[in-house]
Amino acid sequence: MAVIRKEGCKSSNDRFGLKRTIMTQYAVCHMQRGNSNGSGLSTHIERQTKSGKPFIPQNADSSRTHLNRELLSFPDGVRDRNDAIKNRLANAGLKRKIGKNQTTHLCAILSGSHDRMMKIQQEGRLTEWINANIRWLEATFGKENLVSCVLHMDEKTPHLHATIIPIVTTERKRREREGQKKYRTAKGGPRLSADDVMHRSMLTNYQDSYGEAMKGFGLERGVVGSIAKHVSNSDYYKQKMESIQENIEMLIQETEARQVKLAKLKKEEEEAAKESKNFILSLFNKGDLAKARTAIVEQTAQIESLQKRVRALEQEKKQLAENGEKARFNLEQTLKKTIRESDAYKKENENLKEKNRELDRKVNPHRYRLSSGATLTHFYISPRHVSLPSVHIWTQVKDEVFDDAKYTEWNNPAMQKFLNDEFTEYELINAIFKPFEQVSQMQAQLLDATLVLMVGGPAQTHVGTGGGGSSPDMPWREKKTTRR
Image 1: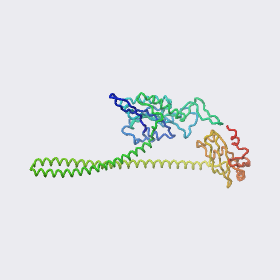
Image 2: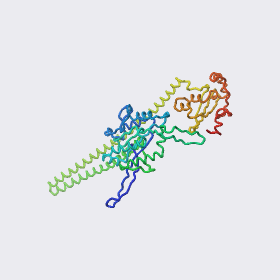
Image 3: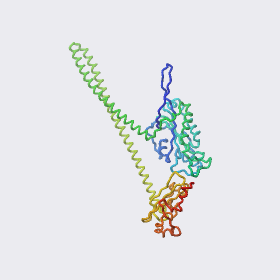
């Protein structure tokens, strides 16, 4: 967890009348949507991979990982965080099928300013702080919707990772557009809606209520409109790499400064030896042999001390250089490995999708051809944001090209299967367009024998107008003047 926050300051006078600055200690509540495959975040939170292998992030202290713990008890048969998410969704009584790209859970990071959190821990109030957080989560999102809450003690600041299922029972609110049919759901029924839970007004309420719940621990609500923001792990490691690079450059500069200092010490050593020799000679000239011997011992000790300092500086210089190169090499290797693994995963995923498509095409060839026998050259659904989209097709028989279009509804069973990847575009077109609507008059003549078998009679005349269909009976002609 990494949070960038611009701390506020308060000024007050001490008992001597001098002004002193007090740093404001903030409560941290960061909310984000969880993706459909939460295994990556689960690996970070639970400190182990899906296969059970230990995983320690670079910003964590492995000697303290054993202090991390799950604070909630899972139901029978539920092993981990991912199972807890699936269990809640399966037993929530949802009426609608969960979409492939629909947000299934939310992730909340709860903590506070580092200094205050460390003081709470030192005062033995960490358990009290944890219980206050769990009470706030259950009161805000519902006890049943809080499926996991993990305490992390192996990073810089103690913090919680809470997993919330965004299930609400309020009526769905959708923007009403003129001429469109109103869409409503049964009142009081449970719905999976991250949009309702993560609405801007709700996020403000969360910050207000969380700040109120944390007041007893010396933590205040963040400043409204603050530029403070949460930093993702990828950005955190990028910043850490830049910091390491800056440290390496500082070490190089410090090494150069020490080299200058070393040269100065060597010069001092030579001058001291020269002065010692001259001093001894002057003593001999005076005949004070005992005093000369004492001076020799003192000067020798000074020379040995200087030589020792020189050796220590040379060793320190060598160690600094080795540490800088080792840090740079390890960081470069880690980044290269991460990039290679990401590229390999993307390539493998694309290859798997392509193999599945080819296999399905061979096993079910009827799913990839039009009922009219014509060739589908292109099609699209537009516009996406209205309740009655237009399905537009372009077909070809030999050199004859034809295009047609029809309005349909998003809740059309064929459209729903297509959106859920259960129908190919060919099956969607066959469900919406009859065979004689897929070709022009000339194409119908070329395909007459096929159409007789498929339709039960000769193909009917169907003249394209560039927008699809014949002008007298186009279904969208009336839609332009009489909107539903």
